[in-house]
Length: 468
Image 1: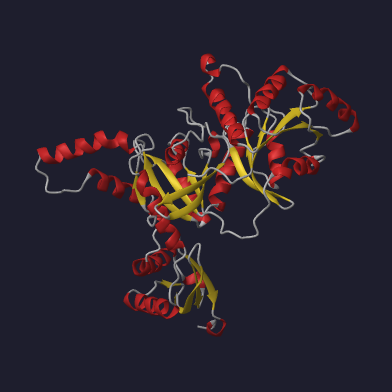
Image 2: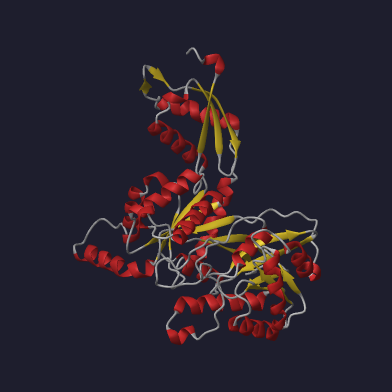
């Protein structure tokens, strides 16, 4: 497993000094949540960035408090601090962000001392200098003892170019060789189904904060990951997302931002892994999330987490069948799968994996399934074979009559992949009923697979046949 590229820039500082604003400014887009409430960023959030002829990874961290959170019982604060410390250890260069409006604080001094002890290049960014009056306040931060100090306004980009010039001076130049972007795998689900624990189990590292407290993950966290199997090396980006609550249960703007980012992660990912709680089964919220995945037209697999907790129920089912000498040898897992398919019938094309982030059960199959879905997403169908299949399907089971007309397909071809998209030249798309569309897609799947990915139809009216 490889964490990042060669050049890593860590942005650190105490809470609410503008680290996430600077992070978004450096990478050129809004990823980290920016909010006036302190402590919004908890995990290490990373993203690639480019500056002039340099490329590097930027890591945004939670606010460092350097207090004994383990003794005070603040588990989340302690975990956030550990994440920041790991980022410092990994970094090639560090930007310490301070707030000119609050001046030098004892916590700033403590953090500065820790950073000097790290031996890493440290660049001091005095933030929130939005006018001349505030600029005079930057002088007092020279007491922190860093030679390279920059007055910036992350919100308005003032001083940021000069900061980046200095930070990246020691970084390697960007290779001219273009690489294919790593597939984005979004780990999604409702709160407390074990999404972060799942990523940590995959990485064998406490990369994301895991807690029994629902809603621990507030932002979408990109986790670069390299899988090595023999001589084969495959890169991915795992996206840990905030738990998707029903909108009626959103009580703060922070939760709302987290929900929006998680929904965007679904729209922008290549494959979504929908994590379910094996004990709770399929809930209404699980169905809503599956509906968002279906609407996004991305690849999908369903991971039933905490399957180790369901082992007791599985054994009870086996014992009952043995006691009554039941002829039905269907396993508990098969029964569970059937029930799951009934509840998520519209995502019946998504493969199901039973796993446990706690014990590692089933995780060895995860990337094998993801690899198969990638292959299916890239599958292309021969045009003559496609048209012959559609013809046989219509002959065997014609579409229903709609307003006295029957849906007709004159010609079809596969327009695109990721997802597989088929253009149908038809008499009138209004005559295609949802039920028959599902039936036609099912026939295409039976012939060519497309497991784990949506099949999309684009209907075009055949102008020469408009009168029919």
